[in-house]
Amino acid sequence: MPSESTQLVQRTLPSSWLRRLVPVVVIAVIGSITFLHSTVSTSPKRLHGSTKLNSAVRNGLDDPEEAVPAFTFLALGDWGGTLGKAAGYPGSCCKLYRGALDTGSSRFKVDYYAQIYVAALMAQSADEIHPLRILSHGDNFYWSGVGTGDMEYRFDQTFERVYNAPSLRDVPWLNVAGNHDLGGNSFICGEADYAFRECQTKEELLRYLDIRFEAQANYTSPHKNRWILRDHYYVERVAKDGVSVDVFNLDTNHAEHHGAKDVCCQCFDYAKRLHMPQSVCNTIRPGDAACFGGNLELYDACVAKIESWANDSWQRAMVDIQASTATFKIVNTHYSPHYHMEVEKRNQWYTLCREAGVTVWFNGHTHGFNHDIATWGTHFFENGGGGGYWTQNFPGMNNGFVKNQWRVVGNPYGFMELSFSKDWLKVQFVTFDRDWDFGGLDLAKSHIGGIQRGHCWFIPRTFRESSGVECRSSVNGAIGAPLQGELGCKI
Image 1 (cartoon, rainbow, N blue to C red):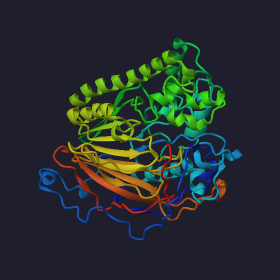
Image 2 (tube, rainbow, N blue to C red):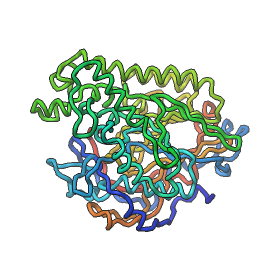
Image 3 (cartoon, rainbow, N blue to C red):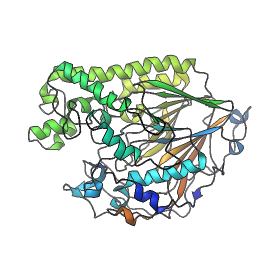
């Protein structure tokens, strides 16, 4: 296996690989945007000038820089773009200006086919490090998930045909559901996108909430059944050469930030029906006409159902994580406790991490990247720039329980590489190097470059005793694309 500390991989995929991909569309988003232009740093900053280990880390642990991985994973969030790009429909990919693609900013050239570009990056990474699993943090199908009527087509177009490189084709994906997989802000009942409709009864509502999840959970991939979504909560163990990891896949869609309330209000479709501007959804409240038509009984039933999934995840995970004998214990979910939840729910998940002993928590939802470290040792990675929705970042969190260690510069797309050795979990951000040329609306004009590795951290199996150490290969400055900044945008 080539050295994982290599920061720049000059690897060009055959152009035929890119041509085989079916263009997919990604989404448009609501909110005003301010662009903060920046340029690529020729000498990217590091947060730490030394990787010298403290005594707690040195005690009984191998040198992390010399550690040989037993196996690796990839981790990706918010990747499932909408359809129609080849026909000129941007969908979820891009910032819109007055309802049209904003070609006044060069970032649309990256955004338009971002999911395909990230898939090409993943193929290069997988060809090098040979991952045994891919962690997927939800929002697998923008805008509104899939139904029984369009499930096969959507999986074919925006999953199978996109992640089809030989190095990716047979790798199992461990999936969870995000808010967009349950409907996002649109009607819940119905069988297919553009045919979802208003639910008429409580029984129909609850049945279709299950159907929307099961449409993904019941899918069988033709490539060694690589799509895995067993339930709202499930555990996957991977072990090799004396190293083991348990992945606890959780449903956290009860989060306040675009979680249960937005899913259950279905405001985008109700506002449209009532001839209201979509902006009313920014301040929607239960009982409002654009929130489930003002029907509090059905709204409350919907929220209670989603809350029950989260409560079940918490209760079962608390038991299972405490009982786990794995070297590393990882949470894979859609939401962050401190970026997406109010205090009560945040503290509930903090208690799980602290008392059960979670090594690392991975989530998406925010379409950017950062790394926070809790006072009790758990590491939190925001990893939501997988290409299904245009990227944006928010300030890091320092709330007395967690402290921000790194926040990506600009708004690049990418994913994380995870390397597991006897004593260490290495997590490293991956994005585009400078050899990429993005073709905008014309995919054929794109040139595939190589990998640029960024922020990197070694997390010890004794994570309660030490927060670990930054890798020598870590790069924390401006890398990847796009590098324009955005403030004040709704996710």
